Image 1: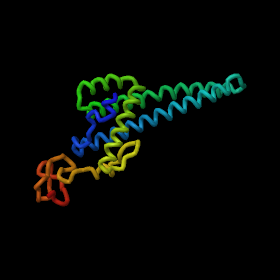
Image 2: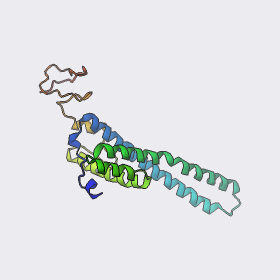
Image 3: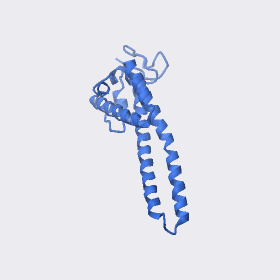
Image 4: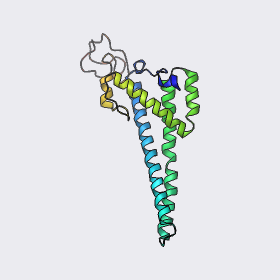
Length: 183
């Protein structure tokens, strides 16, 4: 785990703009799933506290409603848990160059709590890499507007084709207009 955090192959430079956008999108979705999970757990704790407070009182219908709400809230945590596991596995496969370490991380991510810990490491490492490249990154990741700053002008933003020496202003691979021709 120390190798993973201290630079175990997570290097943004080796990805083209499409991969960077995909990684940033996965990072943002992962943090959203974690926020949803934390909010859901807090809701369940609040409902359980209210349930304890009203048990033994004359408010039997309220106790029944609170019990039902707590059970529904617990069930609703399944979706963010699956999202956390899925996006952490996607980032592990994409970001870790060492296949053995990547496989180890994927297996470890099958448990949601381990996936959250590994997701934290990924998000922190990615944030540091984004900032090192002059991108305004927060704990939630990078917005697409900020990521566009990172795009290399010598590559087509649609298909990633190398436009070095292109003077036509059109990508020969996909036909996308590139505005100012690449130098």
